[in-house]
Length: 239
Image (tube, rainbow, N blue to C red; front, side, top):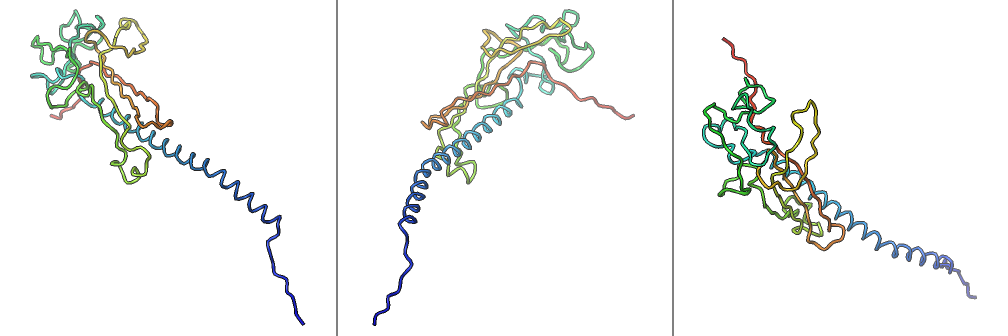
């Protein structure tokens, strides 16, 4: 006498449900991969923006102009004369050493640090002089590739590691405003001035040649620095 035993098996409806679920998972996989790629691109872009901002801050720490470091005034860089600056920012008619609106008795922010009738003019040519980097416009035309891979161990997984470019440019811009008024507003124009002025603009441009849509953006950061001479901290000397 034969005894037949029933074995548990997968019902047809369960098989259909399994196939449908697997199909949904497979359909969502490309979307998940695309999202992961976009997240990586955003991370790379943010890294580039941080690097560009760091470059801009670095440039701003340098001396305003090469000629501010001339001769006896090296320890106290003077205000420099300009060819196309606002006339209200020229040497005061009442005191040939200071700028209109400043205290004649102060010892900083002067055109002539030692009152020896020696004035220095702002550089007419922008760019690096020799191999020494010591003022803002020495960074003009500076181009550097941002290699994320070399900035940390995490960078090696980026889809693009050496095609993000940072360009630095400096130029004189118009400084025209109503300085004689009790109040005034100044909106800097970043168009180049035909001559030297009292304001240098620094522009850092972040670009990509990767061909990746998420990275094909041009990001521009700007700042400006003024021809204001130097300042000294007040010191009290005990007898």
